[in-house]
Length: 389
Image 1 (cartoon, rainbow, N blue to C red):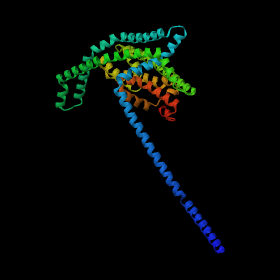
Image 2 (image 1 turned 120 degrees about the vertical axis):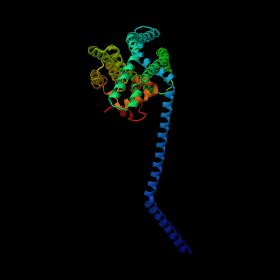
Image 3 (image 1 turned 135 degrees about the vertical axis):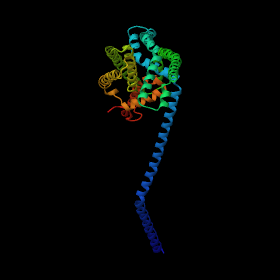
C-alpha cells in the first residue's frame, strides 16, 4: 500500500510538473501578443490624453482671444502702462541712487513723456490741419481719376453714367468726409482718456511696483524660485528696453532720412510724412505698406504725375529695405531676428484685436513672449519656432 501511495504521489507530481511546464511554454509563446496588446492600450490612452490636451489648449486660446478682444478698453491702458514702467524703471532707479526722491523722479519721467508727446503733436498739428482741409479736394481728385480710368477702359455706358454722375461723386465725397470726421471725433476722446489712464497707472507702477513685486516674491518658499523670478523680470526688462530703444532710434533716423529725401524731391510737408514713416515702421511689413500707399497718393495729387509717384514710392522702398534688411538686424542681432511670417500673422491678429495700437504693440509683445518661452522651458524648444533661420 505504501508503495502504491508513493507511486501515486510520484505520478501526481510528475503530471503537475508537466502541466506547469506546458503553462510556461504557452505563456512564453503568447507573451509577445500580450505585450503588444498592453502597448496598444497604453498608446491609445496616450493618444486620448494628447487629444484632450490639444482640445484644452484650443479652447483656452479661443477664450483668451475673446477676453483680449472684449477687454480692450481695460487691457490696452494696462499694457501701455506696463511697457512705460518697464522702460522707465532703470532711469527712475538711477535718479533715486543719486539722491532724488523716488516720487520726484517718477513725476519727472512722466512729465518728460507728456512733454515729448505734446511737443510732437504741436509741431505736426499745423501741417496735419492743412492736409485735413485739403481732404475733400483730395477725395474729389481721386474720384475723378477713377472715373477717367474707367472711361478709358471702355466700360459700358450705363456703368460710366453711374460712375461719372456728379451727384454720386459728391455723395461719395461727402460720405467719406463725414465718416472720417465721425470716426476721429469718436476715437479722439477715447484715445486721450486711455493715454491719461496709462500715464496714471505707469506712475503707480513706478512708485509702488517694487513693493508689490517684493510681496509676490514672498509667496515662494525656495530661494531658487525667487532668483529665477527676479532674473526673468530683469531679462524681460533688458530685452524690451533694448528692442524698443533701438527700434525707436532707428525709426527716428528713418523719419529724418525720409523727410530729407522728400524735401529734396519737393514734396509738401516732407517731415510730416517722415514722421508718419517713422511711426508706421513700428509695425513691420504692414506699416511700411500703408506708408507707401499714402506717399503714392499725396505725391500723385500734388504733382499730377503717376511716374513721379512711382519714383517716390521706389525711393521710399529702397530706404525701408536698407533699414529692415541691414540696419535693424545688425543693431539688434540674432536674438531679436524673429520669423517674418510669424511677425506678419501676429500683427494681423493684434491689428484685428486692438486696431492700430495693437499693431504698434504687437512686436514688443512678441519679444516678451519669445523671452518667456526661452526662459521658462514650459513648452520645450518652442521658442525656436519664432526665430528666423
